[in-house]
Image 1 (spheres, rainbow, N blue to C red):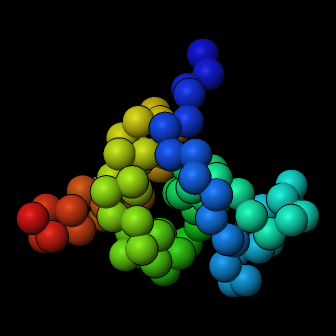
Image 2: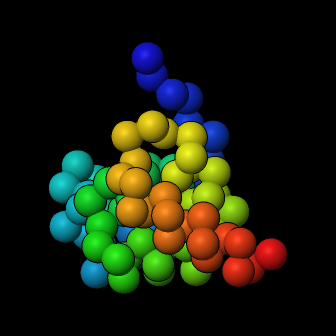
Image 3: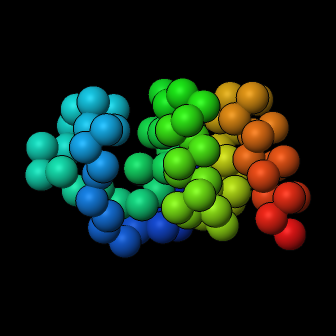
Length: 84
């Protein structure tokens, strides 16, 4: 089953994350793809950067997709609770 993207606004891909976006030669992608790809393949610092820049969107996306790593969900839930 395909999950329909909720956050479709275009964002620039940071230079430090461009290796995760081999399929985006124009250096832009939609926000949900950026966050999902970081949660799938990023390290701790990249996930933290993502949450700092897009906290609400990152929280929603982390729990929207069942294949997000358990460790990433743990940190996002912790940071979200600290924020509130």
